[in-house]
Figure 1 (cartoon, rainbow, N blue to C red):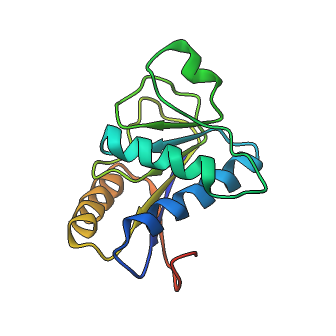
Figure 2 (cartoon, rainbow, N blue to C red; figure 1 turned 60 degrees about the horizontal axis):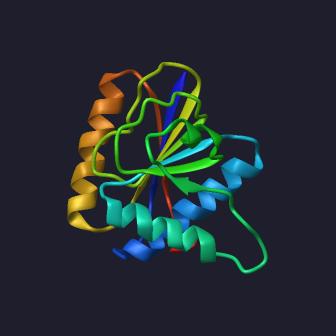
Length: 148
């Protein structure tokens, strides 16, 4: 079964969106899930990579940017702006404007992170329609503060 949780942040800040994605990625990884973070561009992937290296001084969050090589399968948290064929994820955190790239149909949690930016809200609505039409379980969470 595929479930989709939409997290709606109260501001328009891209950095807060990325910080929340890091928080979710760390939480999912700590609970034993392999995580894909889907972005729109190489710049977005690099920015998220930098943030994951520096988000907390007292911990290390293992991750890497997808290279489309077999070594990607060794990454507990994989960041990608490209469609990948790896199906061994239990969580997809979607920061991109397109629906989560699914090449499989097994138990999976998709986490869409949105904010008050108008273009992001529009793509979120479109993704919601796509997921609803696919029969996925949908939930939404309105967050009060930018840190969740």
